[in-house]
Image (cartoon, rainbow, N blue to C red):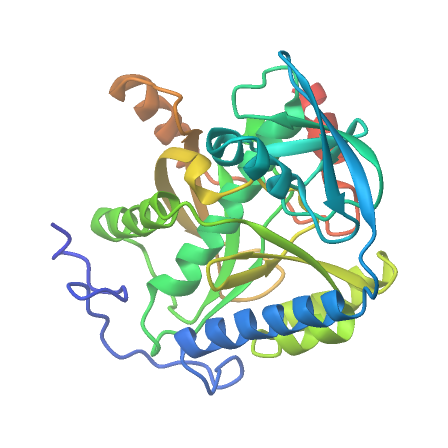
Length: 334
């Protein structure tokens, strides 16, 4: 089906050798880098858990249209996702993000004390936050696609993704690739899309973890761009960096993200543009468009969204401003 595509890392897609830049080359294979990052993520998670000491119980009041349930959970350990699993499998699977005492809360972020809990799904129309979290998660997954699609002889480093702006028509991720003047074919874009769908169908959790800057620097020591960004991000966040993990893919984001990759339904990797005026030479902007799972759209209507998403998205990265504030301001201005 994808025999015309020759650049990607699958059994039927072979990439010829490329001249890579030693300046940005890693000594490990891409798979080994992802494995090492995931292992360091696990080590830091275990370290933080071991420092908690005595486990304290808290009361979490879950409110739904039909009922109110009080759950006994563990402070700084239990998460909204843990509560959702106690309630029902469907609630755990379909909840996108949580509201804790009226504040947006990741499904995998631990509670800090007694609280009131609500869940929001992708069909919660009154909350713009759900849409922004979905769009941000799509950018995150697109980064995972770019990071794992190419063979080891193509030098690839994730750079960053801008604050989600739904009115732009596409979610994006900027990626450094040592492929001068690459122009992806239709077959190559379809291969990217197939990999995105694979991540979605795997229904992988979007785990969240706040780490000290020195841990983040160790995790991303193979990525020169993240290594440069981390100190500046840490200065604005009390020396903390927020990480997310999906499978073995780890990346930086303020969040929130949706609960799991399975909440992404129909998706298209619509375009890849070379950024001629980007902050770093060799950046390509990966763009896509997606619908939440369960939202149906006919072929013609989705093709209109795809066509719009092919246009170069001119959004810029703004690392030190609250994501939701930017997103809401952008929506109000359009």
